Length: 169
Image (spheres, rainbow, N blue to C red):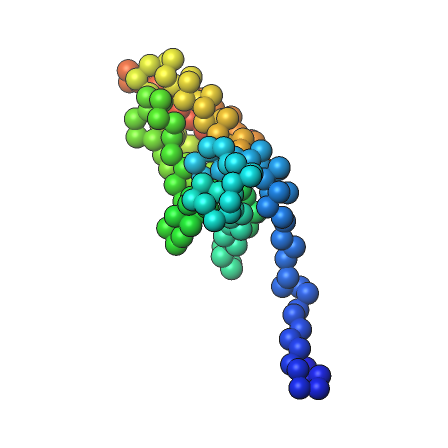
């Protein structure tokens, strides 16, 4: 629309989504980066690599079920910009003894859309499997707080399978 010599652009209110402030997202996420799970200093400069930023998340693809929810999450600036067009990777704990660990983000996306159960790692001993299961549940409580997960350890073939469950399983 033209008013005098100034053009005013109007926006369709159905396409505008409310954005949260950095402090709202930080308080909700406990000032922890959703990608690396390390503390984010709320007083650090937003221009610093380890400074706070809001990751707007990916919008679900048109016609696709599940996938990312588009929920804003707190991330270090370097973690947020580092993922760019590459799928984010959430590493398993460095002190865990797991073999063939499943990619955590992809597993959560599958569990979000399908539920059920999935083998996520193998461990050589019951003690390591229990520790990995406790770590995974703690990590997923921050990564996907909207989902409810359980962990089961199944012995078999001289190893222990770490099974992640979601939904009615």
